[in-house]
Amino acid sequence: MLLENRVAVITGSANGMGKATALKFASEGCNIVVNDIQMDKAREVAEAIKAGGRDAIAIKADVSKSEDIKSLIGQAIDKFGKIDILITNAGAAGGADLEHSDEDEWDRVLALNLKGAFMLCKATVPHMKKQRYGKIIMLSSMGAVRPSISVLAYHSAKSGIIGLMKNLAFELAPFGIHVNCIVPGPIETPFWDPLSVGMSEEKKQAFFAALGKKEVPLGRMGKPEEIAGPALFFASELSSYVTGQVMCVAGGQPGITQSMTFISAPESEGFGK
Ligand SMILES: NC(=O)c1ccc[n+]([C@@H]2O[C@H](COP(=O)([O-])OP(=O)(O)OC[C@H]3O[C@@H](n4cnc5c(N)ncnc54)[C@H](O)[C@@H]3O)[C@@H](O)[C@H]2O)c1
Image (cartoon, rainbow, N blue to C red):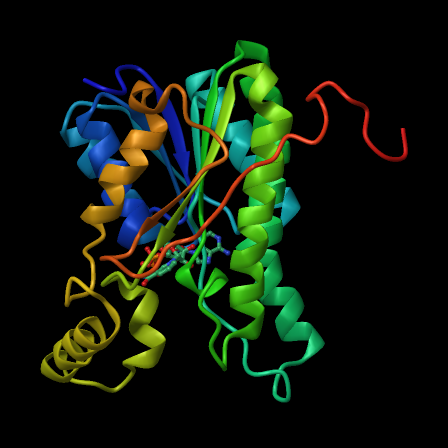
């Protein structure tokens, strides 16, 4: 088992990739904190994990709110006494082109998709530092590297996730905390529901098939379980010498050319100190 007796907090794990990852991790021996705002579904995921022999708790928290995040991490520590793995997975598309974007929407989309990840790290890292061990995995989007018109705020947030991940990987490496990022291509999850409102299941499947064929070299959209495997790599000792990296899991869509240049020693004090 790759995650025997580890504890993972996975935000937005009532559905989609978060749920698939929670179930996969549990099958590898991990205990899971299932977080979401959709509590009926979150409880179902926690029950399925417990039925499989691992421990789980479902906790309601809106990850765009700092008080909710403090409560989530506090409850996770009360229940399990530690957090080994954090996946900042909760997210949703939103925004418009520049002309139709407004400040409130920008703030709402950035709070969920970028600020939430920052606040989750802020609340969790002190616990990881104490044990000098941690694996943080962030979810970005191909939109961070492939511009399009209509989701300016969301793509900006997901670009910010890559910057956040790289800077934290640098800062936290001396503490044995690894920070990496998955960039999914189009994956068949409820994420796409706002675009298929009113469509029959048949029409929705045709929409997915056409999107996969047009956009993805492998010719299809991905399944949430196909994100769970790469997440397991980053969460386990399979990636013991990997931090600060972006993995595109996108059916062959052009990935991200990246490097993490160390411009100062990790112990330097930085600006303003
Ligand atoms: N599906 C895709 O094609 C795709 C592509 C690129 C990136 N992503 C990103 O991957 C991640 C997972 O997406 P998914 O496709 O599994 O989506 P999903 O909609 O299936 O699941 C996201 C979950 O997050 C929860 N959530 C939403 N707002 C929340 C909040 N404020 N607090 C707590 N939970 C909240 C939802 O209730 C839902 O259960 C997201 O960050 C998304 O932006 C998705």
